[in-house]
Length: 206
Image 1 (cartoon, rainbow, N blue to C red):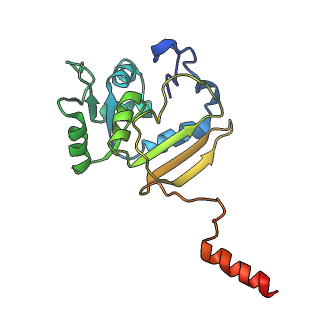
Image 2 (cartoon, rainbow, N blue to C red):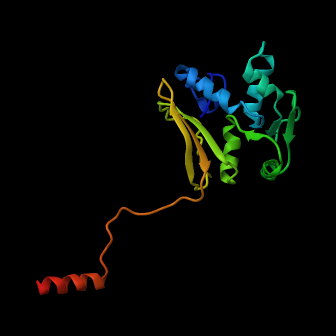
Image 3 (cartoon, rainbow, N blue to C red):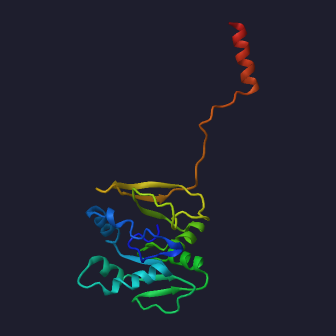
């Protein structure tokens, strides 16, 4: 999930494939993004994504609907290093970030969306704080970079509630939390001693 929109978004670790989603963008993906942001929303962002967004969206000219939505939304920023937030409607979550997020989730208010923010998402996954994933799965492998489901992700079940495929092969799927992981086995059952004895008697009878 690292640096999907451009080479300079996040070159951490020498990542050299920044902008890997650009060649797959089409009208369907743009429309889905618009639908996901159509209702009232608040944003929960990590430091890096907040800085990327704050350096871009306030300066978009005209009536761009995405810019208008993001600029007017409440922004909650999870960071231990930022001291000043210049983007309007921004609030810094300090101290116990996990508890702060739990408090936000318990409040009445619009949907709380996380965009990017790979490091923050690892914390959310570790503490089972994600209710829904809206994933765009691209037909490409990179073999390096930051993972969405990194170490510390707890086992969890999800169900698909919506899915479609773009003209460029991107799978757009929404997953809702659905209990724990269910396990089973396709292995053949080993007969018990009683079953083996019964089979032997049947064979002898024949």
